[in-house]
Image (cartoon, rainbow, N blue to C red; front, side, top):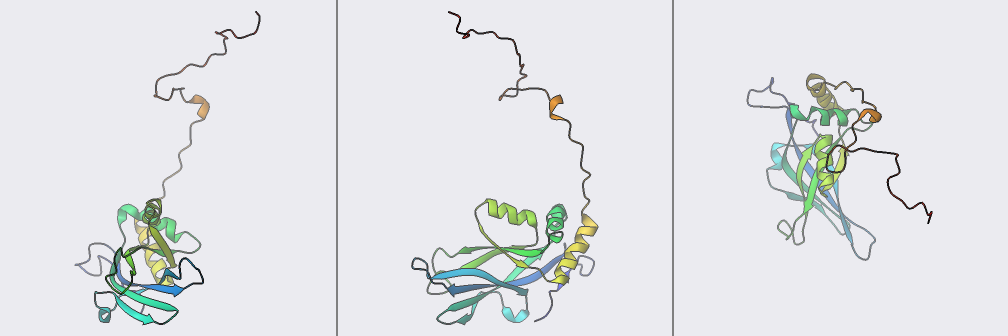
Length: 195
């Protein structure tokens, strides 16, 4: 299999931002479960090749598994999300993230198939999708992709200096509506039991 072909605006005038074309392989495997006999998962992310075409296709099918190739995904690096790539590249295991959904009605096969929606290298994108209750899986990024991402981070991300936080005791007191509040230790109401 060939390496990922990473493109940058300097290398090709037709490219507006750094990008690479990839294809996603989804796998369906038989599991020993009475309620759910099959499980879908992300199997691989491979460099897009001209022979893949643009339509999903079945690569393998037997009694225990099925593999589908979903070509035509573009992974782009955006300067306004440089922090998301920084967070990914500085982890112990930098990775791709893939959001996928099951078909609502079977269109590619006799039964619904897991269909990738998007592929990213941004930690922030993955977090937003997880917060939105999407199915997000990750796959380790190869060294050349990590190096490409690191070069982008080095050129576009400026680590913000941490600002000293003002001690909480100096903050003005406010009520739940944001109005100034006052705390008093004076006893204003009875209830002392002297009756």
